[in-house]
Image (cartoon, rainbow, N blue to C red; front, side, top):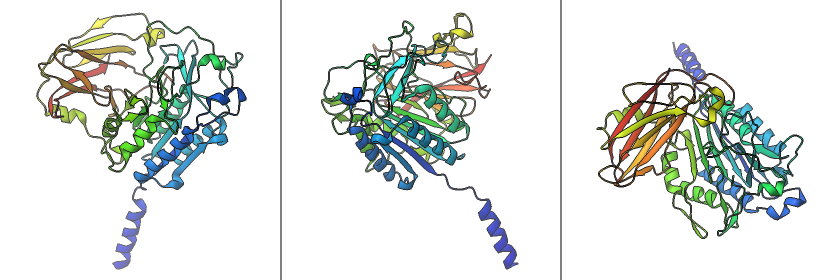
Length: 429
């Protein structure tokens, strides 16, 4: 009997799931091998890698699980090889951190690219970046947003949770301000101006893909598409604020971390609006399950103000058909077509409120549609939130899980107390 119990215990131990592993690829492009780009050296990017490594150590990540690329080692081939190794070593339930610090810029996207409504690709420049190649219509040594999105999507499809952090500009011009803008003007690389679609804005930034992934995604970027990130001389202002927000007290969630970064000081000002995406409600570094925001909202009273739902065709999906404007009153269940754009307008409330907007897809994954500190609505001030509904991944064409999807609106007062909510339910027509 004792032998049987020991054997049974051994079998149970061998069948127990392996502990989740966290691995990271940290890249800091501090200078370029092309002498024409020497003036754009950014020594602080290497310091950003050290800061991020220290922040991850605070979160319990083993130093041996970090791949750190700086200086001459941060070439495009080395970055790709590190990301390949990250993917090969990761399994379902693991966590992956991808950190990029350096210069960013933009270039004309392929004419048929359905996920660049502004007509531009965002580029992260590796240490061997060079001038625009008109023959291939690429920048040698540049990591393009489509490739990053594809790699993130492949990790998520395997059940890996991904945290993406990018400290770079995606803007092309040099703006006045204190510090060094982390952008190289496209003209200095010989990139043609292109012909972006008038009035179209690309909200996706670098992480364009991964919509069909099973793993969770959180993305932080120091600057949105076309915006500026700053280097304070010894590193990125955003990375320094992020590292300070992590230590010494570990935030409970990615949302709490984002809130801790907002308004942080930088040389000549403060960290203003930065770009976030994904399931910010998840515990930091995905150490546990994400809370169910739908269940939380169901326990709250109705919103203390009116909302209006409007639906039309998204400009990013012109290839999917003509413009077919429709509207709906937001009843129990709203049927949507592929590439419908949904906008919810929020009327003026009787008092200032902060609105959280969470979207739960058919696979149960959450995405935050509001800034880190929420949307502000107040008497005399209205706000809206929107998203584009798709039934297949626009990058790969892969069919997405089908089923009910939900937009969750939660109102909090100035003390942070949740005082009301509304659920809007959707399904593919």
